Image (cartoon, rainbow, N blue to C red; front, side, top):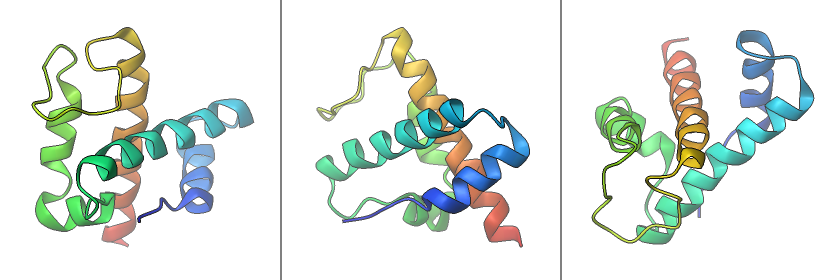
Length: 103
């Protein structure tokens, strides 16, 4: 079972996006929700593995298409307005991992 780097991600969000604690907490929670949903489909899933595979591009593309039907059944509100904020949070986490990898 995977995890996300909550503390590092929170610090990065505060530095790059928002100092509002509620916004930061919500963003981290949404990114973790995506991790859990994909992990339910594939227990081997992790953001880090996606970064290693193709720098996270496949996952980014998959969650970027708001009205696309993800072929596998997934516990995310695909096709809803709520999915926009969830995918935005996941994209921020992917960006965080990409920047962390470059350091």
